[in-house]
Length: 229
Image (cartoon, rainbow, N blue to C red):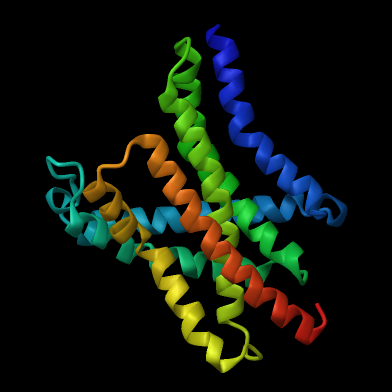
């Protein structure tokens, strides 16, 4: 039973990533090693963030408060998350290609590396040793939400660096990037204030990711039609 639960969790995490990779057309472009390269840049970016947090921020300040949400700690962590935008920019500049394949490669590579490092050990140690627990199911579902969010972030970075983007849309893209970076502050703060349950919190995060993804896709589609991508 424990092995069955572990297998379900692994499938819930990684099958959507595989399906996205296969049916987005990346497999036809031989983008597997490009995704690994994006994952390597993710690892390097996280190491740099950890170094900055350990060097310039006090561990007591970054610790969680008794009520489960520390505004100052989340704000400081989110401010360091600006490095993620730089990481995405590096990926998009180093990975050849054009159109949606480049953006999905960056998003999948980044998200897959994050899932492997943050969920792999947890599932192997936790889910493999228990018959069933909703905690691991929730973590697996949240990983799929992160996939949507990271592809959206890659799209926003690509749009932000385009010189042919309509100037009237530049502020919107900038605001969406700021919302993405400080999501740990405003979204987690709202969830803490409203005291949402775990499933409601996942649904709220999915709604936010879907809305941001829809807006980003709309801007990208208009620009792609304009420049002939």
